[in-house]
Structures are given as structure tokens and as C-alpha cells.
Length: 87
Image 1: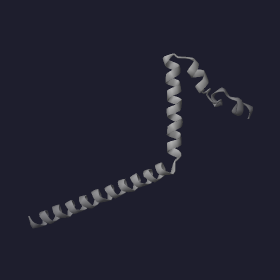
Image 2 (image 1 turned 90 degrees about the vertical axis):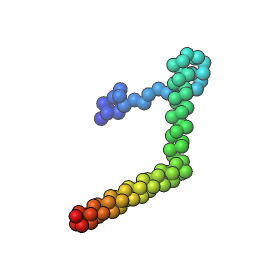
Image 3 (image 1 turned 60 degrees about the vertical axis):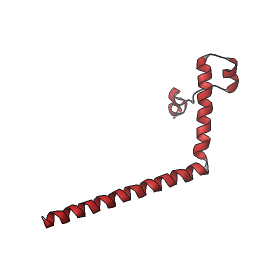
Image 4 (image 1 turned 45 degrees about the horizontal axis):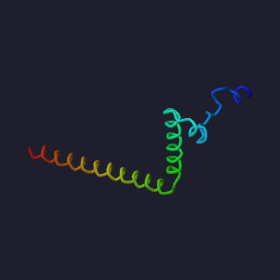
């Protein structure tokens, strides 16, 4: 149990805080700061209710599109069967 709790891979990564990276002006630090801000902004977007509603509406639209494609394929198959019967 102790190994599970204190295993090195289980430890959280050290975050580069705004204070640390703003004092250091190397490209790597600025990139790390930018990425951290970008990730935190996207996390807040994914948690918002508007995003969840948009995701549901997109899923519903995709489902309707698949149903339309299936109906179109069925109609095409029926037309082909009728053409074969006439011939």
C-alpha cells in the first residue's frame, strides 16, 4: 500500500507558476506558461454548460445525417431491385 501511495510515477507534476515563468524569459519558460494558460482556459470551456449543449446538438445532427444516408441507400437499393425485375 505504501508503494502505491508514494510511487514516483504517481506524484503530480510540478506546475510552472506564473511567478516563476515571468521572471525567466527563455523561450521554454514562455512556452510552458502559454501552454498552461491555454490548457486551463480549455478546461473551463469544456466544463461550461454551453459546450455540453453544443456537443449534444452536434451528436444529434450527426445521428440524423447517418439516418438520412441509410434511408438514401435503402431507396437506391429498392430502385436497383425494381430495375433488375423489369429487365
